[in-house]
Length: 80
Image (tube, rainbow, N blue to C red; front, side):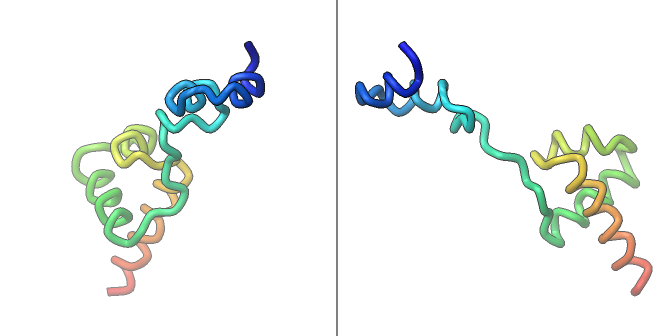
């Protein structure tokens, strides 16, 4: 049975979430970090991790968001 047919048959929500492209089982990653999270990413980068992929995994964000967040936090630190 295809996904549209299941939807028409009023399948249960968990099954629809499993079948859908945008699964509710895997929430979307953060694409933009707030200032606190940017600061956390910079601290993680300086102290323990040098890999933006690992930081992104821990913060549940995209690698681009982490790289941009680290750059923003560095600029704020330099401006102080």
